[in-house]
Length: 321
Ligand code: NAX
Image (cartoon, protein in one colour):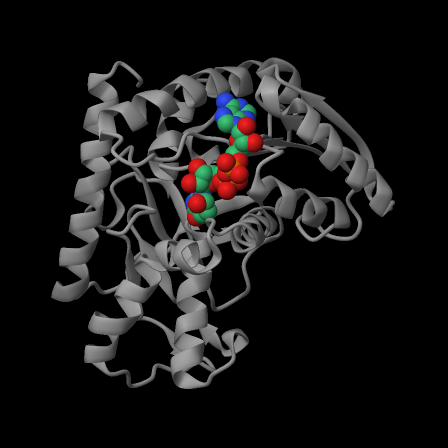
């Protein structure tokens, strides 16, 4: 399989490429060819990463190509991990952020449309991930919109870890947890359908509202405060999990969370790339339907999807869709 990684010389790239090459993403039987897309000034650093990849002598790693040309980077790509982006800098207005990312994700969407394999699957990691996925998809009319996804798996994994810490249940015993909405502080980590050892469980509402939800939603900032730089290994691990499950499937009786295009499920406006509970079979995500949504959940899902709708309106106004 041909795997393209953008922003390959960045800190997530450094944690991600070795996991892909080791077989963690697509399994121990699938050889991988890596295509690294970087900005011209980071090509030398990307060469250094490629040297280290060579030095690991991974049996599954066929070859590595490094380029600053999107058409070459996405040529024949089966999986595209869009990591490089322009994150919000201090004092940056939202319109500036969205237009800087439009300048990255619109041409990358076109390059995927024109060059990638017919079965290409795209995961956008670079923030604002949901809206960047929407922009890329809008510029790839020949690729089904459902193949453009945004990463909320890190939020999902953070929620699993918090619940595990609070209950003492191992993460492997927890299922049916959901992240709804935007990969931002408005996201809604939802425990109302969660199970431990396959059974519903009692949980203190006060803890959920005052501790669990804000801890998961602001975990990125807490990592920056503690580590001095943003989440990298955990973000890479979540990207590996997302693509692994997309290609190889989710476990029976469980689901995960991913930013996928809405067709109006749960009142989320059609066309938005929003996080939902999803299962994967046969290489396709399916939104889990029919879950009961109480008033508390409704208000939070609506607030986060309203933010996504505002972002979409802003990029539309900038002519990016
Ligand atoms: P770094 O700044 O370490 O690396 C980004 C790399 O992207 C740089 O090497 C840069 O040269 C490259 N780049 C920029 N524009 C590019 C373009 N047009 N084409 C190719 N390469 C380009 O950032 P890193 O820590 O790796 O984070 C990458 C992105 O992930 C950021 O936008 C960050 O906000 C986002 N994150 C998303 C998360 C999620 O859960 N969805 C969590 C982690 C992370 O915060």
